[in-house]
Image 1 (cartoon, helix red, strand yellow):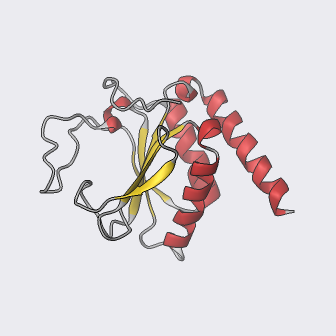
Image 2 (image 1 turned 135 degrees about the vertical axis):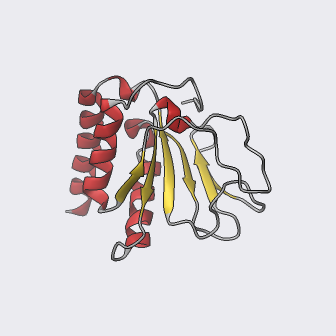
Length: 162
């Protein structure tokens, strides 16, 4: 898979992305902090993102939070494991994790590993109580595709837990 990044703003939320988020939250116990909004990337002071559009505007990104949830960070770590192990099925192209020191970390489909940032790259890191997830356009064509993908992953997870 290739990383898509920003490929143009859409005019409304994507029902398939809403379904993706609903499935992710159902299994994790975490909360949706927002999906579709047209805006620029947030600056962290060290990196100026002025004028660079956010992938949230494409309707393919979600911020998932763990603040105020019992064992929230542990639940977030579990979700991160599911997302990275099943990235192809779930269409995951990028994850930003704002929590870890020194400056957060990122996972991308074109490198298939976490990169721990050694300088300020993402606003809100370290210590941010959420993750940012970007989904491939191909998966978000229909709600049925999304629900089928999550069904495959949850069935596989249930089998491995027996």
